[in-house]
Length: 437
Ligand code: MEV
Image (cartoon, rainbow, N blue to C red; front, side, top):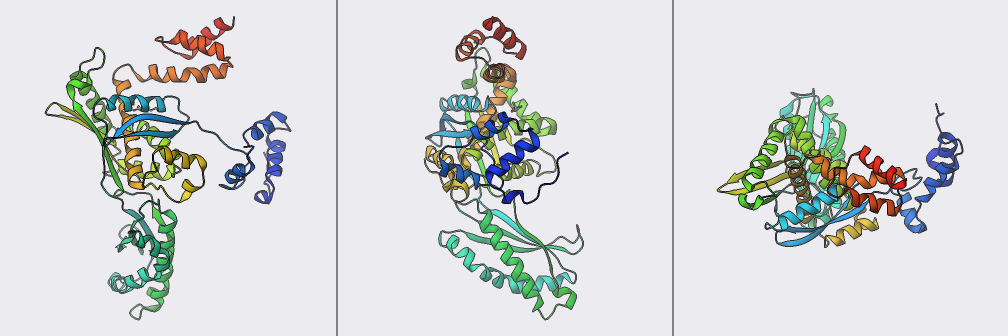
């Protein structure tokens, strides 16, 4: 067991690396080489990455790919994706092409409201608190003026503020529940700054409220924080086409559509399946969210909460046939930003946003929703026809060959051999040994 280390964050990067090597690798030079191999030779760029977090010792790469041919509301997009899972970009590109030939994707932003709360304890009469709150709202709002003025100039700001009595769930527990419009910013800093100011003002003003007893004056602020549950920051994306246009190889359009719709319905009623179904959607969503410098943990948390909003975890996508037209759509919350955060700092994030032709937050919400819908279409297409392993293993072939240390020419020979054949780990090993002799 290692001993606790004191003052680690104060050490230089070199000292931190030395400590890691001494402690975990018994001075193994290879470990140090790996760490240093991923340092960027551009010192400024490296420093930028070093300063994103504390105790940086190296960089961790993810592949950054693009999926072209996404026709969204009549405009073509190439979608950047940062992800390690081998089949995701390929599946997205395939689905993009499939729907390009059938009219593309249609999208719509249904809302952009974000939420934040001040959680506090108040021991006393609820009626008095309600009267106090009514009186103090203008003061709460004016106390945040210096924080909100720029956002207001651009058309955003605080759009709602209410008192919520939660004492039926937890003794003495109330909230100031706030709604925000943060325009192109994800808005976490803006929202949290407003909330912390509300908390301060609430506490100060309570001390001055004559109707309160001494106990009532003593409001206890527990915390002030935005919510990542954003059910009204919502976007919808859909595709549709005549059922007959879904004919795939030997499978008729009707047969494909019926099986596909049944697969979606299973995910609407069966949580075990719904979680995997939605995981596949998040393969597409997270990859774009990450490439564009947004907070994928926030998106994940909000999306899964939305999937469970009715009390049972369900599919985020839906499908039906009406009058011979197959329709497939997704509706999900996506609190995204295209300004602030990493968007001005990370060169690859800037590049990703440029590939997307500098979208605003609403446009990015629509693009990301499309990536999720396309990914789900790709997964269900494979699952209900060939099975998922065919495509997965084809894409995984390079990973297996890399693990085996195959050379470039061995890879070419083996990849050619597996064209149209079933890829399994043991088949690849056998072929590799044969090629290597
Ligand atoms: C794998 O990353 C994602 C899938 O499991 C999604 C699904 O089952 O719908 C293929």
